[in-house]
Length: 144
Ligand code: FAD
Figure 1 (cartoon, rainbow, N blue to C red):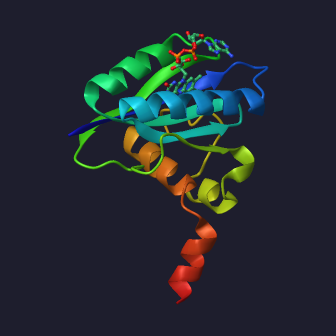
Figure 2 (cartoon, rainbow, N blue to C red):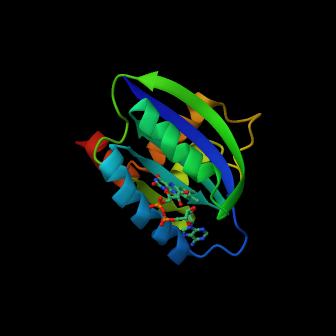
């Protein structure tokens, strides 16, 4: 079984995209060693991350993430044990606001900060997955 964890956090206010790419570079190095996969969304100043892999590796990584000064107000929003990974091919996929298809944001009723009252853990997982599906490919495929 794999452990899956989703958290939301507030990025440091002066965070640049370059710093986000630095985080992803380090994540790729560390995660490939630890057998972790997942996805990171950087949306309107918030991070939404799905981490998955062996339980101890997820825990170890999450503890490092918790003490990282590049973000704050970290809320654990979902945890589950799963038989399969959702992002088996990504040491850590990344999308920022401009790269997420507008239709996905509309479909999920996205609002900044993904407030807990409106997005439960399961919805967040579905939202993350949808953000990484290329909607244009889905539309073309559905017309075949
Ligand atoms: P190093 O990269 O050498 O870092 C050593 C220390 O310096 C750590 O305490 C680190 O937090 C701190 N540090 C490094 N660069 C900066 C900086 N620019 N500003 C402030 N402090 C800094 N790590 C992963 O391994 N996998 C992930 O999936 C992952 N996802 C992340 C998602 C988010 C939103 C954030 C903010 C961080 C994420 N990290 C991830 C990074 C994680 O928090 C640790 O920084 C990293 O794992 C430490 O790697 P390292 O042990 O190789 O040390």
